Length: 224
Image (cartoon, rainbow, N blue to C red; front, side, top):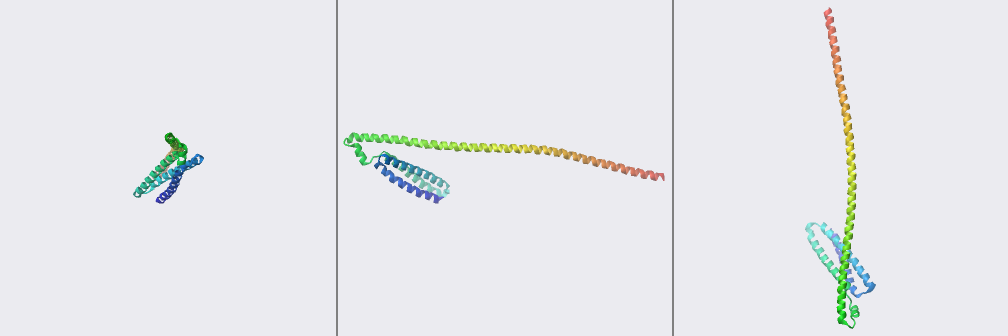
């Protein structure tokens, strides 16, 4: 597990270095070039967030006795991530010296205050945009969880329905077995009754034959 964490650390270092370099270039650009670089950095920051989630999962899998060291390193990376996001936010509303001079012109006093006001408005707008993006991501994640929960619920219902059918079939088989056992019991009872009757009949017949023989011998002896 620790080897996976270290591999994620290397990826984190590479990505953050690239992002730091690009953040420093953003204020010097304008127009489409700046927009494209901002989008690129935003995408890379999202990759770093996903990487942080993977690192967090890896830390949870590390044995408790070794986990503290990795948790400290992960906390440091999270702090670095927050700093990158703040720097990125400032870079999006910052101006290079050339752009700043072009905007200020000769009337530096009033233009300076206008520029500061514009920067504040842009910062506020970026804050709202980021909040909206985070809310959208949370809504998407919530929707995905709801869909997955619904699918799991449907699977559970299907399994319950299948189990109910199996139980019903088992009950039917038990009823059939009970009926068959009842029939078998009646048949065995009838057979036992007939066996007893036959034995009684044989006994009576034997007793009659024996009595006849005794009487025949008696009368034969008496006649002589």
